[in-house]
Length: 334
Image (tube, rainbow, N blue to C red):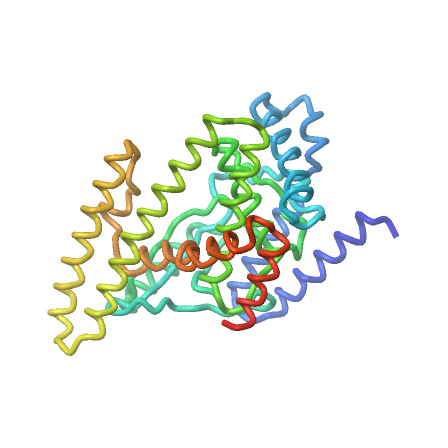
């Protein structure tokens, strides 16, 4: 059978499985994945197309180079992920929701076939995501809600580069590709923080090697400054979370907890805005009008265990096969 037909049939089989599951959520997920699959084109064909803009051609050429680098230098999977491009004709591929109780830092989880339980819920429709976020707020949850430009099926399908990702600079585009490919190396069911922190560690190390190999000294310096800023911001988040944990476990009335919560969030926001101002960077808008438990938790998901993985990389002297084995052992012991 034609290999293209085989791949398409495999996709339809997984989509058919989703359609058999109860609930409208899986219906919209299946339709969203079908749209991505339908719109994929090989990157080589897009580059050769007369309709492609020079900017897109340049970006996809970098993606092609970085994809081979990810195999040769980072030990990431040699498959058809990020060998194609899909224009979804919108700014985001999905809209994600994180929900956390008002006086807790324990995120609500949702469980799915294949990936297990995760601390977020994604929708291909902004309207449906907004409706779900509103429902959760009415139920008393703090909610973080926003569009997401990147999307991964953990290698179940051949994930394409999306038009939603091409609004970034080249470094950010390559970094996200390294991050998403890392999930295909190691993914632990029911542990979002482990998975995202691991992938972020691979992304960081991969970008350092990528930019150094290309002898892009200015870009490497800017990337390192960005990483240092992110690390300092993560420390502020961790300190705020530690203090809120103490507040929420205290033996005081709910109204007093709410007052202490708001005061600690205010202190955190002021410190974070000062940090970004000193670095001549724009602070996240949510520090102004959307700061709550869910925002803190969603930020920690990507960096909560990052120091642990950085230490593993250091102990392996930057040898990625060693690091992947050590991370796998860590997952088994978690």
